[in-house]
Amino acid sequence: MPPGVRRTRAARDEKAEALIRRYFDACNAADHAGLVSCFTPDAVHYFPPGLPGAPWRSAGAIADGWVWCVANLGSRWTIEKVLAAPDGHEAVIEWTHWKTAIGEVLRGDEWYIFNDDITRIAEIRAYYASPVDKSQPVNRLHEFDYEGRGYHMNPPSPVPENKKK
Image 1 (tube, one colour):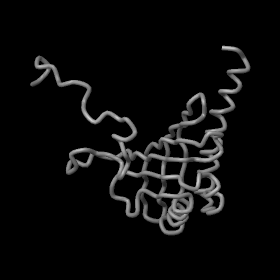
Image 2 (cartoon, rainbow, N blue to C red):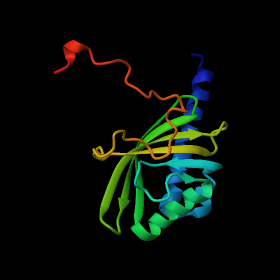
Image 3 (cartoon, helix red, strand yellow):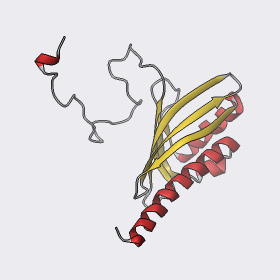
Image 4 (tube, rainbow, N blue to C red):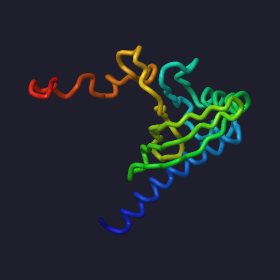
C-alpha cells in the first residue's frame, strides 16, 4: 500500500478515536453543549432492554441522559480499548461506567457509526457485560432493527445430527 494511503487511513481512524474520547470527556464533565456537538442532530443511542426512555433519540436527548447520570448517579466513564475501522466510519470500544453515588460499576462495549466526514457520531449501540436474561427468548438491543440492517435472523444451519446430544 502506498505511504500516502496509509497516512490517510491512519488519519481517519485517529479522527474517529479522537471524537470518541472528546465525547467521553464531555460525559465526564457533564458538558451538555459539548455532548450535543459530538452528535448528528438525529443520532440514536441504543441500549439493552430495561433502561427507561431508551433508545435515546437526538443529540439533545443523549446529552440530557448523560448529564442526568452525572448529577444523580455520580457517573464517571473510562475507555478501556478502542478499535476503529481503517476508513474511520465505524469503531468499537470497551468502557467502564462508574456509578459512584450508588456504588455500581457497569462494563460493556459500544459500536459507533459516524457521519461521512467523521466529525459527529450518528449512532451508538451499547452492549453490557452482564448475564444473559433467561426470561427473554432473544437477548437484543431495545428497538434496534436487526432485520432491517441485514443481520442474520436465524442460525446459519441446523446442528448436524451427529453433534446433537
